[in-house]
Amino acid sequence: MKRAKSKPALLTLLGGSEARIPSAPSEARLETFPNPTRRNYHIHFETDDFTCLCPVTGQPDFARIDIDYVPDRLCVESKSLKFYLASYRNERAFNEAVTNRILDAFVKACSPREATITAQFSARGGIALTVRAEYPDPASRNSKFESRNPKQIRSTKGSNSETGR
Image (tube, rainbow, N blue to C red; front, top):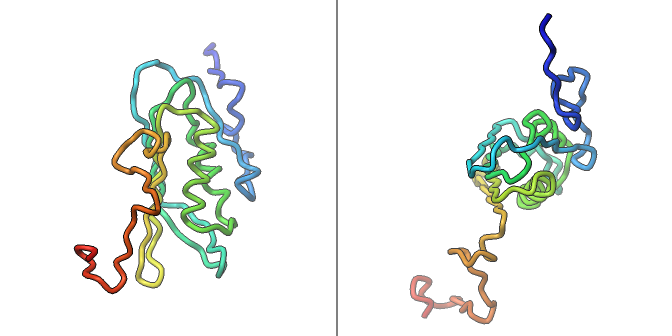
């Protein structure tokens, strides 16, 4: 007789056909499992099936979401991520807020060594929008995205926009 493999106790969605998509992100839970190794490696999730609602018009905003991360002690279980992302379908929020909220929840759930959420929202009115949020914050790592002092930014009103003069 074969023994059935048991799943980690904290994984409540995996293998459960009775699981329902939460009605809001506040009701969703990202589940995790122990990282099987201490080596640095990258995990990539992607979905073209993300929807949220414009906070002004209530119209749906469709996006491709890419999540890249280097796990530390915990990995995010993919079915719980699927349910978490699906819970945004009735959520009214600006695209920038949604992307950063996903990153915050992801970091809170698994405390990765690093993570990047890229949300490519479909064009509305002829303009597409891509939002990229990173952990740790690149500005805190002295990367190419340095924070600027507002006094250092010169106005280019009425001047040559290329030279700022």
